Image 1 (tube, rainbow, N blue to C red):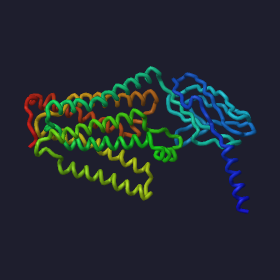
Image 2 (tube, rainbow, N blue to C red):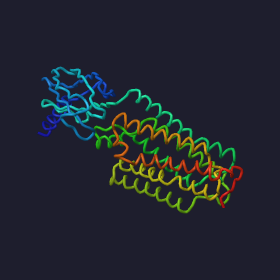
Image 3 (cartoon, one colour):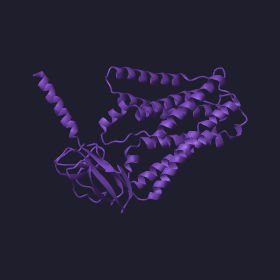
Length: 371
């Protein structure tokens, strides 16, 4: 009897697997200008023995509706009973915006995650400009770490640097690297993310991974320079040391809680991003204070600041260009964290520029160690 039950269970499992349906759009995403038309191939991979009528749905990563005003509503299509049957549909863009297209059928179950993404934009030229701006600020931010390293080596002294800033910056980029590497390479993190966001896209790209790993490497090198070049009495403040210890403790406790399966791996990885966010808010304050206390910016690379200002300004410019071209202003004002952090970084760059070129411009030849 048990053998029969097992036999039928195996047969049922094989039958279910054989009858799985998969809806494929080619291409799987489309960027198109308003009032333009393009064709998309729709295929249904299936072993069904009957024709299937597909009714398209419209929405975003979380919801779907039967109509839309972004493109001309698609007519239902009929796909024949043979495997890998396909049909072409015409996409006519009516309004700028984002759209996720799925499909439903009375004959078969279409996976909710089988979707087609459409971005209707104002201008393809503007899209190219957005990409150029993105690469320029990526390069500016990437090389902004080096002037400080070269300056430290030339002076053989780091008295003009805040060790609080160096330590917090290293921890921040380390957390950012863990977050990016986990999302880009660790399958368990990806599966947990897509189980919560079945229609989502991985928020981390390869250039994010490269930037964060490059940043943590150069900040580590700067930290090593501080160990060799620092003078007696030049050390981290009690406040910064305490904050550093608290953040490390949070990560350790989070790891323990995760190992006990109280929180998921995804939740634990998000803790690293929160630490990075907190550090970004506070990390520039110690350096601005040391410049004020010494009445000098000698030892603090202004080229680093100018490159960071360039990268930050272009990053904000790209955000607004994207919002305009995709009519997606909620990406800026609906979630103000990224905008706020960008403005905060530029604000501190202004402070450093003002200190260097206005307040302490006559102190270039005065190199006052911190007492």
